[in-house]
Amino acid sequence: MMDDFFEIKEHLQIINKSFLTLGKPLHIDNSNVYIRDTKVLSPGGCSSLESLGKLYSNESTDLSKKINSKEDLNQMSKFLERDREAFIEYAVRDAVITLKHAISMEQFNFGIKLLGVPVTFSSLGRNYVLHE
Image (cartoon, rainbow, N blue to C red; front, side, top):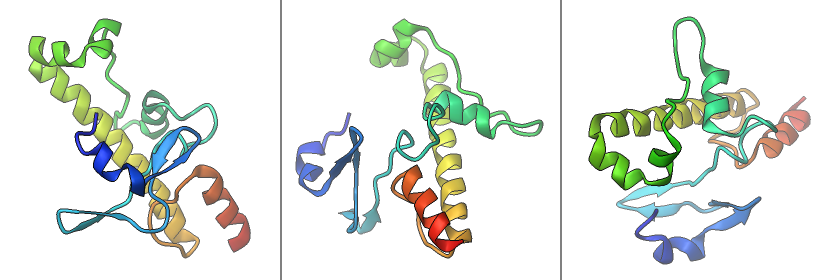
């Protein structure tokens, strides 16, 4: 999944089986990179990208996740070879759902006078309670 995992793994922490950066970011190509995971940054029962896509879909924006066969999901490289356009559409939709959720969490965090995308949904809730 990540070619450089063994190079960066010492700088990652694990929370609820998710790799994240806490505190200092990774420095990659002259950029600071914070790693977050939607699974720990979502309300219970709503952590899948499919659930998040439904959460952010409305009359003007359809962010529902594209449905693919189990075979395609289990063999992404074959899916890419077989139907490059559908593969790209699927991958971009996942990225858009993730981006929308991260922006929403960052905006909420900003509303309680904090910066950045929070680490976990429970930390966001804790910070909200402390702010109020």
